[in-house]
Length: 114
Image (cartoon, rainbow, N blue to C red; front, top):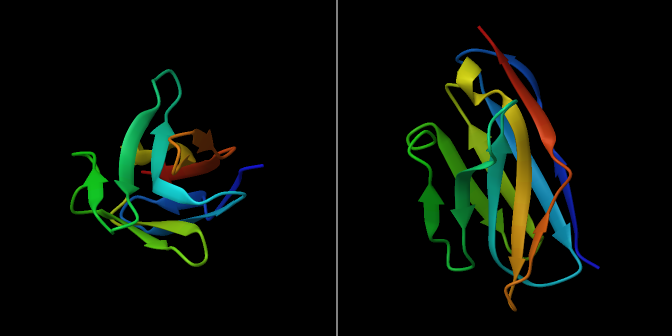
């Protein structure tokens, strides 16, 4: 059974930093990543990373966020710098198995105060 456990969310002032972590278990994963959902908005991509280390970022994340991955630990990280109030959202970890099955974490709240 696939399980994703996120941590690292919280309250931070604008301009601050947070680091999110997601530990996955129960399978081997091809792509792992982060998505977010703000109140009243659809869930959107933040960043993804595959087993080869190739990354994909949303335009809003580029230059401020960095995704990384520790394959032996089945863990994906999201370093978020220069945070803005618009980054306030629930951040969800996503992991796709080698057979293409996606799973989601329960989400971690990130709140950026102005």
